[in-house]
Image 1: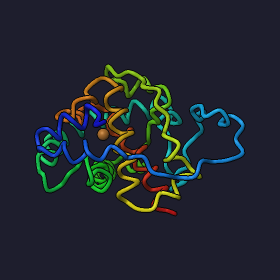
Image 2: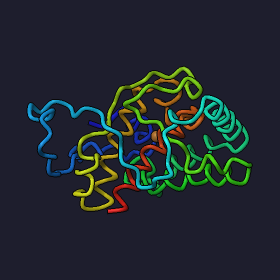
Image 3: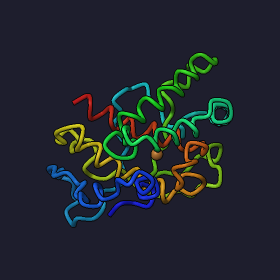
Length: 219
Ligand SMILES: [Cu+2]
């Protein structure tokens, strides 16, 4: 099933049939063993995600003052650098497939541009961009009418399993599916791909996803 977030933009590009006929975004990976909590096939309890970089931080671990400053920086970036327009133009460019096969590769650059802007605007301490884990509460400073989706990272993308994903295409497909579900459930502007980068939470969410991608790349 193509999540609504993806459907809204793939319709514009007339590429929905491709993803609709390839619903098998799940990747066959060995399940972790030895965890008694998982013996009954229930959802794995939330555990912290390993970071490719020891320097990446959860926004929840910043001081409240730093979270407030991060929010101000994100608001300034959104209003002065037009990432919404950039994202929309890229989404409407069928050569980029930014919410399909190009998802991780394109969004890594998109978040990288924000990090570059932070560096040159006196906020290098916010690089790597602090992340928000969709399994956790939304820090109040980053909440703009959002709803906590309580969506933990799928098992296949967790440490111990993600290393078994064989290639970019497979890890990207897993990530797109999870990403779309978070967008649809997190409220604010996140369900709407035409405007989602105007939601401050878009950025720490994508920092989280890119951390997982970095973790896969490190294997
Ligand atoms: Cu997104």
